Every structure is written in C-alpha cells, then in structure tokens.
Image (cartoon, rainbow, N blue to C red; front, side, top):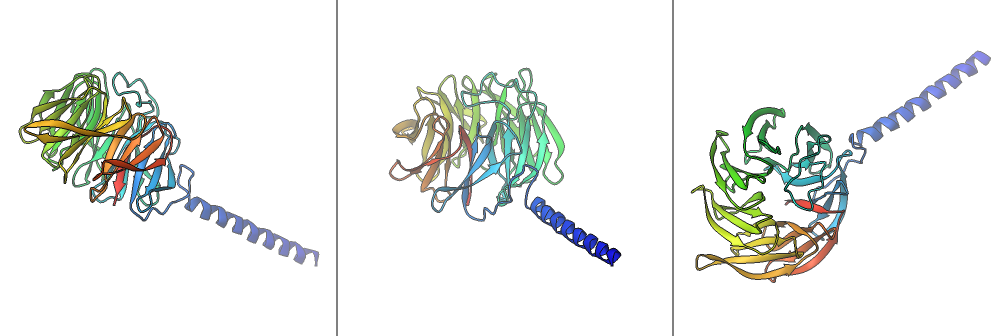
Length: 355
C-alpha cells in the first residue's frame, strides 16, 4: 500500500512539473529576447523613436493615441527609423550616442552600435546587425532586397549594403568624413550620403553601387530628404541652409537661407509646399516655389527642438516629433494648425508611418 501511494505521489508531482513547464514555455513563446509581450499592431500606425527612453511609441492613427511601446532589447539612443516597401519590417539605427543636440563631431561610441530589424505587427526584433562604427540610419532599397547602412568615420566613412534575404554584407562603399544619413531619391535610383564633416553629399547609383559624383553643399549637412518633384533637400545644420539637389542633373540648383538650425525637410506633393523643422525655435516653417524662388509662407509652432516630419498617406495630416518637448504634434495641413499634441517618450526623433 505504501509503495502504491508513493507511485501515486510521484505521478502527481510529474504532472504538476509538466504543467508548470508547459506554462513557462507558453510564456516564453509569447516573449521576444528583449523580454516584452508579443504585440498585435494590426492597424495604421506611426512609429516614434524615443532617443533617450530607448524605445518606440506606437500611435494609432485612427484616434492618435499611444497604444503600444516597443522595447529595444537594452539598446541605447535609437535614432531614425524606416519601413521596408512591403511595410512589414522596420529598421532602427542604434547609435549609443545622444544626437539630439546636433550631428557634427559625434562618433566616439564604440560599443552597442547596431541596427535592429523589427516586425511591424508583433514588435519583435527579428534581426540585430552588430556594427563597429556609428550608424545614423538604416534604409531599405525600393525593392526591399537590400538594407543600406551608413558607418560614420572621421577619416573615411563607409556605406554598407546588406542582402535582406540572408543579411549578408554584399557591398562596402567608401564616402567622405563624418557620414550621417543615407537616403534614396524618390524613384529609388540614386543614394545620397551626407558627409557631415566634409560639407558634401556623395551620389551613388543604387543598382551598380558606383559613385557618380560628390557635391559641395553647406556646413554640417545631415540628411538629403527625398521629394516627389525629382529633387533632394539637404539640411545643413551649421550654415542654417537647405541645399536643393536635382536628382537627374546631379547638381545643386538652389540654396534656401533659413536663419535657424534645420532638423528635417519634407515636401508636400499636393500643395507643392516645402516644410522645414526649425529646431532652434520649436516650429515648422513652410515655403512655396514662386517666381523661381523658394518663398517663406508661414510657420507652425509645434514644440521644443522640432525634428522629423512625416505626412500621412492622403496628405491631410503631418506628424512632427519634438525632441525637447517629448511630444508629437499632429498638424492639419490645409489650415497649417496643430490639431493635437501627443505625449510620447523622451527625445523623440525618427518617425515612420504604416498605412
């Protein structure tokens, strides 16, 4: 009898242990290696990178509320963020450096530098690419088959090209000093690498990976931002100007004098307006091309250290990250007024919209 009771007790312990193990496995299946629960972002959303909160705020576009927060597996100082063409993956550059005060003279960090590839629905980190030098951003090509990453160096920077099929490195392209953003023209044919320390932009053929030319722009260029009008717009932080580059002509065709440090440039296709974030005064200013000249039309007060600008798919709203205010301003494009201010994390910078 005693032996029978012992067997029953052992069987009960085994069943309990199996149940606990199954629960733990189920919990682990619902968690990624960053330790957060699998999400279900199955709705149009804006993804906001919070530079010093070290996470991503997800804004539901239907009501402009923060619905989720994506953790970044202990990564520090995430920067700009880009969607792949299929809008299934996000690429986030982890800089391990606070770039909110400006982009010139950085690059001292030697650890924790990487790019994270994140699933847009679940928020899970699918891939981490470890890097030896600071990446200001990582961006997909127009087919989604490649990921281009800038590697900042004070002597000679590089642009790295990875195949997204297996994340293998296929090209290394030498550019100038102090590389910041790497971006594509609107048609995807040309890549623009902003050499901040050189005051130049290197133009690279997206297919052949060959350098076409390197153009002189202003002092401390950070990013060349694409537009549907066939041009690129370079924000020069120290010279407080925007350089307009013709993609087809591969030359600088205009210089817009601002009188403030620009943070970002966005072109609105329907209105033909050029929006520039005024990091100095917490505003967005907008220009129209009149009589062959970009003419200032007005400004919109958003928040301290206004930074990235993104329009929704129908162009009726603009989302502006305010690094110094920890907020995102929703701007009605037609009236040029702020309709809503959304609190997010600390020092929000990059933004990507999935619709």
